[in-house]
Amino acid sequence: MTYKEEFIEFLIECNALRFGEFELKSGRIAPYFINTGMFDTGLKIKKLGTFYAKAMQEHFPDNFDGIYGPAYKGIPLCISAAQALADMGMDKGYVFNRKEAKTYADKSLVVGMPLTSETRLILVDDVITSGKAIRESLEILKSCNSPKVNGIIISVNRQEKGKTDKNALREVEQILGIPIHSIVTITDIKEYLHNKQIEGRIILDDHMLAKINAYLEKYGAK
Image (cartoon, one colour):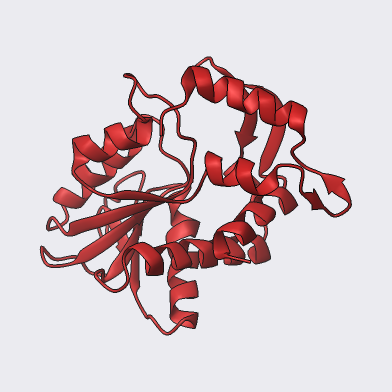
């Protein structure tokens, strides 16, 4: 089993991936929903960090010095991914931003490894919709000696249109000029789970697959 397949089963195990009918922030009614807030125990977040670490090893083998996580969801991601990399023999730094600047003692906007203009970072986040949070992070980093952001890793690429007919993630990628990779895509998920039994039940049957395909026919963009 590949780490991508393991991650898909992990999403199901944690109830972080659900199928049904869900109204998204965009107003779209989607047949699937990804809730990364379900990684709510030490064991789960440790395991999640391992999947991010494996994605980094695949896409950015050794051209980074540390991992940046935007507050708040990115904080446990950058720490758990750094721990996982250390277990794999790659000791990297981690850093995250403060939501509110301190007015005493250490007034830095970030917490963690020291940053210079030569520091190479991989940014981690759960998902990307408009890219607003990512742009905010890049502005924060500019004020912290402008380290280089060599890439971004997220959990799932929903492969949906953004403001244009292009994939929302690819839109952000082009605007920022930074490569973005996901651990899995919605295509990976549906191909792996279709009619597959996990713990004695079929997770994604023909009926639900047809709903997902119809939704992606309308809103999808690879």
